[in-house]
Length: 114
Length: 115
Image (cartoon, rainbow over all chains, first blue to last red; front, top):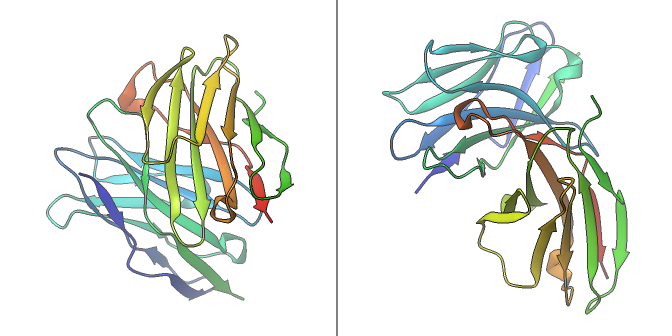
């Protein structure tokens, strides 16, 4: 079975400060991991993915994520937060069995305070 | 390229009715997946269609069904609506030529309210 946990429902950070949104996963074998962002009344926008290779993955809008196999984590990071980064962030895992569906975490609401 | 288009954006139905939601994938994408998003259950996978065949299915009752047409457009149907079916229904398309590189791109969703 595969699952994703986002331990924080809400993260607040001051504009210009670094931000981290946490994600841990549980999956058999090597995972395919994703981060998506959702703005109000919008669908999900793809930010970045980890398939294999370098543990530090760079994505859209200055976001990056670090894959840590020993800690089964895939935390989303950004060096300097913008007010426009305020949104709902989802971590997701896809099984490597060949199925094309994503298993999502419960989401973390990020608020960047001006 | 145009993104994933879902219609309608909003729907209001009453219990017992049925509803059909439509999804047009990104041009060239042959896989379409549907997800339900609710405050209580979060994002849950409904089913995936590829080349007009349901390839994968989540844990939802048979009232939820779908289909895909030869142009890859997909429809989702919910019969005998219940209050708990109120949700944002998201469609995602992808081009799984290589599963590892496959990214799902989402539409803006259809918000269904069941009264």
